[in-house]
Image (cartoon, rainbow, N blue to C red):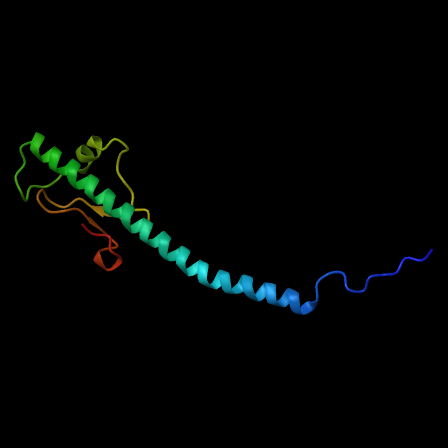
Length: 115
């Protein structure tokens, strides 16, 4: 009793190349979109941090009867923020600025990190 070998088992080189090409095409589309979504999420988180700083700064100014243009005590403002001093997720640094002036991120308006 002989068993006949099946010569058509497995994938051909062409089939494998087509699958690899499709995976490469999907990766070429997905990776830039993922990077863009990550950048957008970092920008939105930075804007939320700036709003938190601005709210805490205004509360601090009201409690301490500070007028527009007065210097801000960053440590006292950070004490009003439950999680402490926020950090820019994209690596920027925050400037609290004077009372009445919105806080800024070092990445600036070009990256969309502004109020």
